[in-house]
Length: 257
Ligand SMILES: NC(=O)c1ccc[n+]([C@@H]2O[C@H](COP(=O)([O-])OP(=O)(O)OC[C@H]3O[C@@H](n4cnc5c(N)ncnc54)[C@H](OP(=O)(O)O)[C@@H]3O)[C@@H](O)[C@H]2O)c1
Image (cartoon, rainbow, N blue to C red; front, top):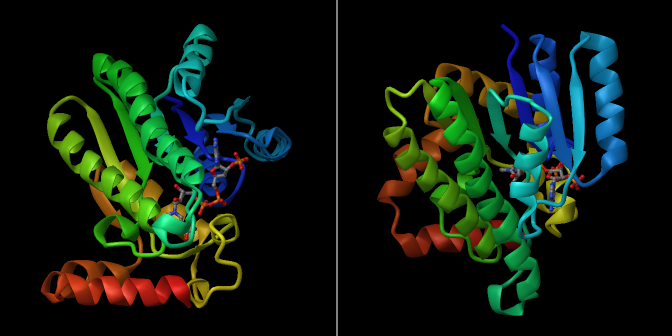
């Protein structure tokens, strides 16, 4: 049977690749982001290539009430969401006290509040049906202190923690939740976050590979997917033995490179 996936942040990067993977498996799609022209272009591509049904919804998910509006639009149209990809997100470079707080609040609204609300709304429906999959795009940042990208790291720590707890609560319901935790990925993220040509993104992974790993982990019902082996090793085997101050210094240097 066809599964319909709702993907936030589908206009570029990892979200766009999730859409391509899902369509390649014959699944229908609801694509969400602010840049409607990019969503429409992707819609045309996917319909032509895979003959799937694609809906596009223009929505700024950092606006209070927007997640509820999105849910209402989807349900009023009678569309069922089988897979939810909470993927939209952005970061922002700089010392916390020097940053424009409005930008950080917007980040929390998108990276945390929209994710929380959409998971709550669509997750309830999935649980009632006894079937569904949720993928939350977190980050390796979710396991680390984040000097000079502090709020972003904190939002991703929220996503990791929320996913781990929710996965336990959902045991036996037929619904799974997975946190995809990539390291640097070559998308529009670095530019939006103010990193320009930072060394941190040299050798970054591709959006295609990252999305493939996340999609597979979601299909397998994994709770945490650190999409690159070297980061999994670092976070699971090395970081627990490093003093917190040292970890923070390493991260600070990386953010400023
Ligand atoms: N790239 C990395 O290094 C990296 C590493 C770890 C985790 N991640 C996470 O991966 C996810 C996807 O990011 P990406 O790397 O693919 O970056 P990206 O290319 O910048 O994609 C971000 C997506 O989020 C959407 N978005 C941003 N603000 C939005 C808003 N207010 N309302 C609705 N949609 C919004 C963007 O679409 P519009 O601009 O059209 O709205 C875009 O489709 C994010 O959660 C990010 O934190 C990225």
